[in-house]
Image (cartoon, rainbow, N blue to C red):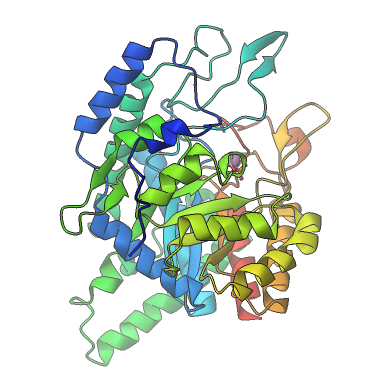
Length: 450
Ligand code: PEP
Ligand code: CO
């Protein structure tokens, strides 16, 4: 069981320095929105968060792998059954590739149903000729390039809650109601990917899986009564950035009496808000969900150890995942020391690689992008460093979408610089498209095998 510090309450974070919180223009309206959230049903159940934590415990022990992926920022505008289904499809396809390739269980966690708040490097941004307050995610303000749109509106937290509830509802229906049935494995192949090399490679695995199922059936194995074949667990996660929202959805579990942040199964603390004396660490130290913390290029062993002590003093495997996002060079220089320090202190963390956030750059025409090769290079370096340190490379954390967008450069169907504007739809960071994601899954599966 995790440990809630004696002085902790869902609002004790308020007496700590809280970075990246919006300035609500009207305090009374912010309080009213918080009161509404506190009155809402939880989005997830504590028992589910415990199940995820025990699955992550298997990852910590080197017996499973974590795939955490989804949008950089979910959108109030792009909200439909189709977009949720396409994201789930690519997640399921990647899962098939990874499980088939590694023969290991895969823990599937979406950046979904709550990923609406963004930390930004600067409080203002230039759009064309005007300087505007930065877009902070649809939970806070709107992305439209006007001063009015950028005013923080606390009622957006309530709207984000409702959109998360609807998203999670459909996700549960798809994952438990037949769509994710392994006999549907061919159906998840997207039309635009099906004819491409990675789509065909996927198809070949799908055929093999169907053959294996047919073999089992012929041997008299009861496939109908094996829920593992018909349902999957896809857990939800988001960056626990906006603490008003997280506090508003924090509840005590009626079974154990423990506190859980019921906005998602797993929450992570971002690179910009992981200060040991800060409000985010204070808040998440007290809830019992499995947690992630991003570790960027400046992370030190002392910081990592302090985070272990603050967030997982009871050393529960699966409670804490370090999501490393350093860029290939800093990773090689910094990660070995972190692995050693945490290992020597015998903290059972999951080590995962986010190869996205240190690899953003702007093209000469100013478009924010990432290159597929740099992303792959960071994952490869991560595997190499972990293996050299005798540590299980536990997972990958990605920004992707099921649509055929052109936001990241390269991949087997190389997206070229001049094509970036064709279908650039991300509200924030550039995401891998479906083909690039599938391509990446095949390469990660190969890394896992070697
Ligand atoms: C993110 O995951 O979208 C993000 C902002 O990451 P980081 O905290 O690692 O910069
Ligand atoms: Co991002």
